[in-house]
Image (cartoon, rainbow, N blue to C red; front, side, top):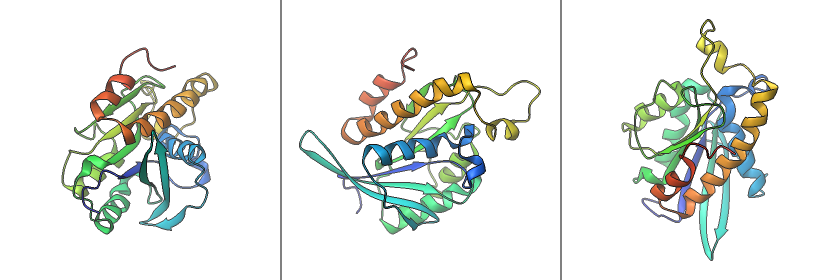
Length: 202
């Protein structure tokens, strides 16, 4: 498959098990859920230690084949699933791979798209970058807000959003899904300009 720009890979990060479904750490899974609904993909299969959906997305007379991967390895081993997928499809150009994840450093609902960089303290992304051997991997971060001063970080990311925060995160998930679709068809820099600007949360 190599560097075929008609094929893209989107990985949403989270923890498996129903108990984690609506936690802060699982917004990556929620974006994939939104994308499956948007693209009417309901026939995912088990592959690469996760759920894999193979979808054809069309816009403006162009068609992109998209693989959506939801690792079921628990967050800190997400790289195992991604490495298996990358190896199987012989992906050489990692610019066609997008990781969708939560971010403590961003306000609730804020989006930030980047083409490379460090893991920023996120264990799932850190494992992916380590197993791929590069930081040159596009990622879309979704803000979940900073933890309270006296709360353990692990407890915080595994907690549910408050009712007020959910009113912000639900539209942010939909906006993130739109950002992913735009990323399929547009230059990364243009999508960054659209979604990274402060005040673009709503």
